[in-house]
Image (tube, rainbow, N blue to C red; front, side, top):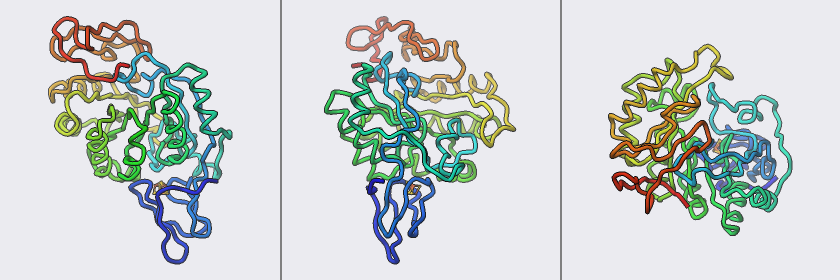
Length: 338
Ligand code: SF4
């Protein structure tokens, strides 16, 4: 167990965790909403420090990040636990592990070992992903700091519910993030994820403002967040608050966990979302979880020349001109390329 960062001690040995926007008040011998931070005698501990539940060498495109070191490998890790309770979670076996099994699992590993393995595998970055990096922040932070010393970049794949303090703490070591914007309705966040919308919107804006490379993902669930007006709200928010150069990944839902009663997202719904994004003025929109479609490619926002051709998570062709511009019209293609 590792003493946690970001908490304060209250009366009667209660603690307030300030790692995420739930700000749990935790009585002694209890855990917060995420189930992986425990108050023992007025001291808050991370129960998942150095306990790796998933570890893979993934294409960076799988995060998904399409404009950050495309074609590179990313050493991807996670512990169990999440601060959300999404009933459609596609990784629920590990994200909800503490609630399902009433225990913590994971192979012991130190930050040094994570970084050594990332270098051995010739990856360019470490991704903190699969579950929610915020809830294993102490471990992610120690890995990220060491990774930078060895020339690696760091990526958070997150629900964006961390506190502002956390973003400030990690910012010197964080190079890119893919943050979910799951809906534009607070009721969706409340009822389905047991969280709130506004902190996510605030964090998206803050991360962008800090200059960390940002891409946004929306999983479109039939009957829950596929209303064209809501999709317009999301697209307009990205355009006006984050900038039209912020890539938007529209991802296909498949029935899982507690949401088995919904069908796969129809392709026409995904396409409608794509054109809503285009109409809003977004430069880079991608349809995910439907391999082998033309909407996985990057096109020049100005002249529509094919810039990066993909098949699934594989890059088939890169057609970037000098200074990372469109070779046809010279438009600057946004991203982190080296
Ligand atoms: S990280 Fe966990 S314990 Fe801390 S505020 Fe969030 S849900 Fe609560």
